[in-house]
Amino acid sequence: MPKHLFKTPFKFCILGSGSWATAIMKLLTSKQNTNLCWYIRSKDTIEHIIRYGNNPKYLSSVRFDTSRFEMTDDINHAVGNSDVLIVALPAVFISELMNTVKVDLSKKFVVSAVKGIVPEVNKSVSEYFSEKYGIPDSQLGVISGPCHAEEVALERLSYLTFSCKRKNLAELISRNMETPFLRIISSADVYGSEYAAILKNIYAIGAGICLGLGYGDNFISVFVSNSFEEMRRFLNDTNLSPRQTTRSAYLGDLLVTCYSQFSRNRTLGAMLGKGYSIRSAIMEMNMIAEGYYASKCMHQINEKEKVRMPIADSVYRVLYENASPHMEIKKLSEEILL
Image (cartoon, rainbow, N blue to C red; front, side):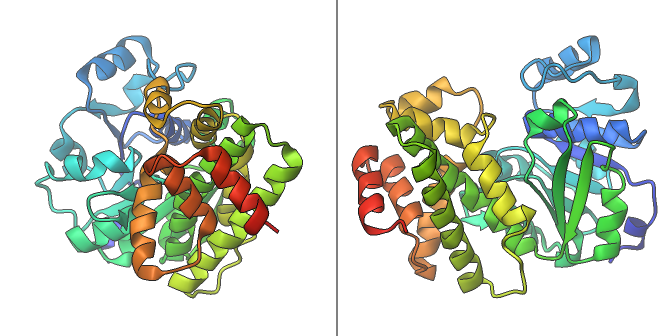
């Protein structure tokens, strides 16, 4: 473990300009951190933030004092001058971005705030950085929910889970993010919290489909409880570990994503349930629903793992095989849900 990672203050670098990246920057600036860098691909977005103090596309109500941090569209400058990299951009863009990085990552601490799978390799973000860049498990962390960026922006009391194999290092990093309205729970279950965050997006699309089809709260509660059992089965069958899946990073994150008005995956599912085609639904949304891409990746992963996952399979068929949402949910209601 590089010794500099145990010295504070860290220099943080946020990769991404979406709602979650914006919320994380809000948290870091609220702690009076000065060693901050924000990598944003769009020069226009950088210029707007410098001029007006807010992100024009996401969480625009959040105001920033731009004298407190550096912004750049140079990924190698951003990565090269930072200790802790917080990856907060859609999983579908990670490989393309990281292929342009020429900086040695071996001494960096990489934190994934991504709730999706890198599609080119069907790996979670921490697995991707571990395998491609040789970053040891002790230098990898995962931020998971239950927490929506929109509620962080509104400063509503929220909880995050920070998962890392090195508890002392996780605590050092977490201190830079905790605020009066955000509390952080620590966990050593990187695999479980990361894959739970991936799976809950798939199940939220399914819950949204149920909503769009006109099913009520009674049925959706059964759908979500069965989704939780399916999630737990996958986690325990593929990575047996002493984890309490009823805790926030697992059940809590699933619940908020399936029920919240802020859930883009639930919104996507509701549109499909109301009769939108998948193409038109995606075009109408202004944010990426990670569950859409994760569904295909998880289907391919599970072809090897062979875990019984009928709900995830149904969502996959709706998204990628033009299956009828009505018929898929009807089949689940008659044969699967208990």
